[in-house]
Image (cartoon, rainbow, N blue to C red; front, side):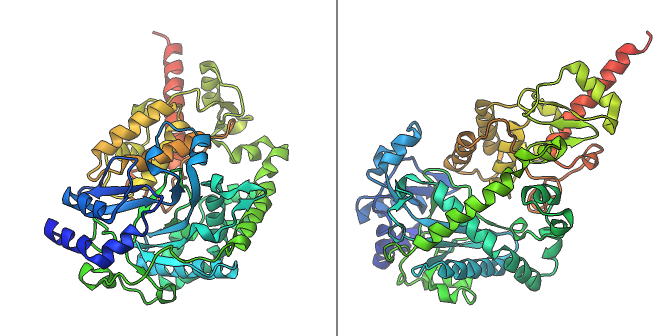
Length: 488
């Protein structure tokens, strides 16, 4: 796509109109070649601002799901309370990204739309992301103004997260069936990798969950939004494919073809997030919040467990008598040596993962591969790195530095706003006394899928990358102790 062709497309009156109608009260951020985002905060006040950005090299545009009193007053230094005062509302935008192909994304979108309609939502917008997924949206005005006597605009990202989780869980069994019918090879990738955790969390038996299929191992419906979250604007280019992020009638989801999103064929005749009925999402919000409450007792079941090994499954890992947990005091180096000598025959001792820092030379091969820069799976890598580094003893500033250095090594860098937002969310939602681990090694949607799994002699003895460095440190320490005891 040449600069002249890009300018010609965005200069079309019907395209400029559709993009501009989305800009009111939102952050609007231009994207330049190479996926480089423009400065934030930014906004569009006049239709001519869009062409001005394009003339200065912009090829795509992203905007906020949140509505603001004045987007230009936003800053990374603002506290939560200040952001809540500036926010006037938010749209629900479900972002489907499918590693299993566009047909899998269509099936997911169709099921989500059907589930939303069951919950009373009438005005649903759908658009092609421009690559391998779809955005399903509901306008801010469709939501009740208050929830439990609190202004709903202040409940971001908590309420949309609960809605997304509720919808994804409701469609999960049917989605798994339909994906297998689409491609039987997907079944193995969907096998749940955390049956033991699930059996404790949900109060089910191992037999009940061991064969569970998780369709979200092969595709993603984004739920981990942070404040100031952005999404690709309707009718903007996807600068990886040069397809248009094209809105279309939700009824056509199964027949939609990416070929319709070629710029020369785009008409600009369908709106996105412009139609709504007041309070049409009231049932959806109520059901999602009730569902979240129902899930809480199941996830909190561990607190009443007398069996500490079971309790540790939710927030720890242990192999061969070694458990990593924030719930117990830090072990001394002598105790670590004793753990290695005693093996798994004794009650496991524990130490705090946050207090024992794993040096980078003891990172597992998959993490080293990520840190060397990767072409695919960068968003999943952010999730992996944040949780791996945090449970490996790194503080938030150190994690920030490592993410920044890693991003510079990627062939195509992630927008700083994305990984900073994910880091900020993890920091503000950290639960004391608990470790949020990276995905397990056999989670099909992560290490193998993004081609960073390169196991060595230690890898086949562990279930989670966090165990690698700890096990290696303990083995090295034990060898050191034994060596000192040998006669000279």
